[in-house]
Length: 149
Image 1 (tube, rainbow, N blue to C red):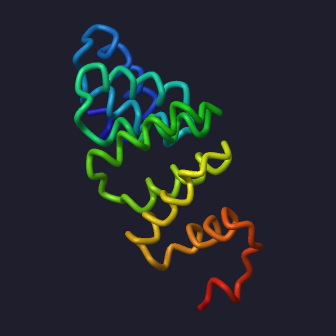
Image 2 (tube, rainbow, N blue to C red):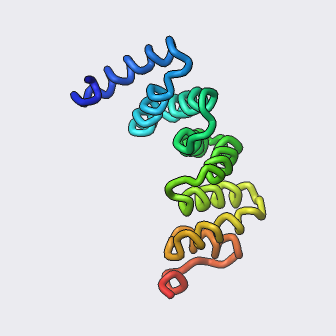
């Protein structure tokens, strides 16, 4: 009812109470992740994604939330692991997942970044940010003329 009335704070409070009482409340965990992401409460997103995954590790949504929270909290290992698992579960937007994974791997100097960015481009050939990242990985300066061709 609070959701329909757009009372996000009251909804979050109610769901947090429910989640503390029921360790299997995956619907509550998922909604808490959504609410946390909308207000950029990344610690809450991370906590609820891990609670969800403890109950059901076979759905892609909690991995996507955990990966984003890992990126925002400066926990690249958690983000990398989550994107790798997300890709195993056939996510709705594999190009974005491959790209984000490539970017994380590149910042860590991992050569697997190139493969991931190529997979992102295989999924979405006009993905400009992926083209820029590929040029960066190859040690080239991206410019608009290269990306327009």
